[in-house]
Image (tube, helix red, strand yellow):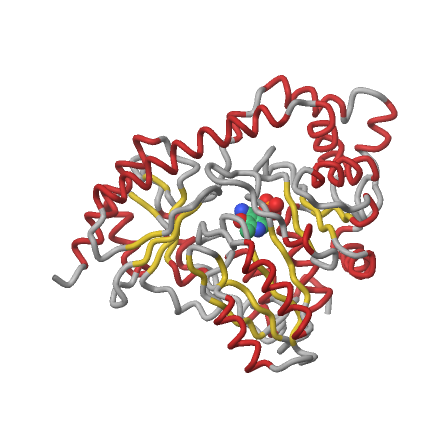
Length: 410
Ligand code: PMP
């Protein structure tokens, strides 16, 4: 029989078990329907790339193509670990965060998102235990879930992951449990929580990792977007064995799919093998543009512009919440990043409320999307403050308050 006669039933039994379990997000479908111009979006996490000076972008892009030598690199296959020049630039940039790594302790990925998938593929067997904050980054849950782990979500408060609850969970798991693989954390301005892990908890997490025998994966896309207070020392600067994930998405732009993993060589050697199967190597063109941007252009000036813009928007959102939201609601107070987390009374269901919010002209992401069970967090939501103008943010929060009040049991 020729292949033309084979039909693929996407619900049929040829689909892998792990993929059959994946469900399209109802939220995404709703958003796709939200094409009205008057809908204000508090749901995305997009950086304000329009702030990037045109000349800076032009220079970085031209540098990747203007000479035959540059084209011989940017249009060609490259090393799986990434271009040596870019890895040296990234190692240099991490120094001002207090992280000291050599260029060969870095592997360049297609965004931090690919780093999550590669790490999951390298370390997770079905049934293995991994620890995350609960709620945690939706894209991490997607990347991990494909490898069928048993995810234990640990709640946070304003000082980050609750170490008392982590310890209680670890006691249940047991010391030296071979199924326990890693703890994934976003210590700075967590997505979706907006909270930051304090120094004492960072130290404690590393102690527990030693004691119970698990790896720590530190995901840090927002660390440089701090609006008040001093920088916290990264876990990676406190302990060499930490697997650190970086990305240029929030400093330059996510369109250049470039992130990286800084980790011990023994980890990178495995991740390298997995990456060969994924894409052989990342886009050399993207990498050269990124290398030139961070090596030759005063990028800190633009970062300061991002910081000033987002800080104003965060302040506007916090002021609007104070003004319009009912006393039954509470929310986090992020010192940086792009999101804050709103908690409503237990009986509220932000998933079903989204349709009403859309009707009122505002979107958010329902809290249950950020939990591995898809159920916890139904009374909470993530809102983004980096994307809309201050006027729109105030109006969106006013609309959202109206929608919530309709559902409050008085
Ligand atoms: N980790 C976290 C916590 C994120 O919020 C994001 C994206 N916003 C990513 C990873 C993926 O970033 P990238 O664009 O580098 O793939």
